[in-house]
Length: 317
Image 1 (cartoon, rainbow, N blue to C red):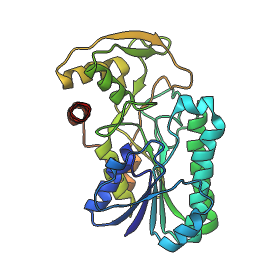
Image 2: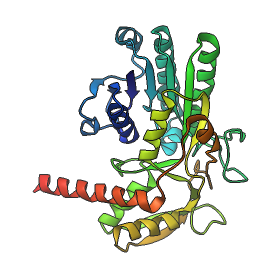
Image 3: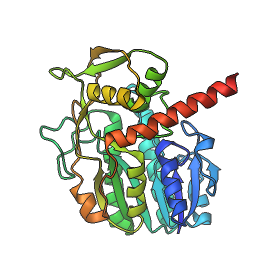
Image 4: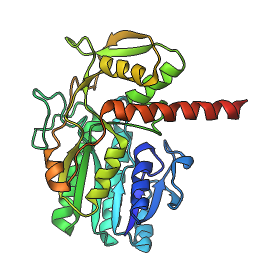
């Protein structure tokens, strides 16, 4: 099967690309390197440096004749989306429509979209939430991710597109960098490596910080592999378990065998107070369930961070 992975040089997209290659598929990675890294692209994948908003993209898609598009390229920062909603919409909606328009005209069979189970449900009153829980996005980022699914529904009705949306919880794992608005796991691990204090942002009444559902990147890659031939519509991809920010910080210290320092900070606008995903539909429709517990996922993630620091130190010497 010939597959296009947008954002395949990024943290999650590169793991997905690896899974596709290991399964024997032909994979082309499209990335503009706004956040992806060339060294993340696995050997065996063909790399094309291009932006998903490129108005000439449709012609290229027609020449390539992909069977599946797996769409990981996105603007992923909640604070950045609140600062610049226009840019968020340009990347997450205009870029998506560009792919859908060009892809469907080029005859793609299937579209795998990466949604956001950690953002679109807002602050749920009960946990875990399933896919039928009413969306209540608290940021332009969450809004654009939800709107993307509405566009997919339109293309399904008008052009017969088969599509799946994988609504990720909070993803962590090797290759997640701490720069910018990366996941809290990588930010905390970097701070612990450098003996810096971390901040536990606390919503009102939540002394341990917000509650999140942390899912390992390898489990997300497996969900994409399964979605190549199964499922239709949205599926939550998480664990259904909640971990407070303070609990996460303690778990990271345990995985590292090292003690760190923290301080308490205020709640950040746009952040949900709590989230956890019910993944029963993914089990039924995709045959997927999480396989990696938090301690089991943090150990290789810490090892990767330490290996990267050692490599950077040797290069700087």
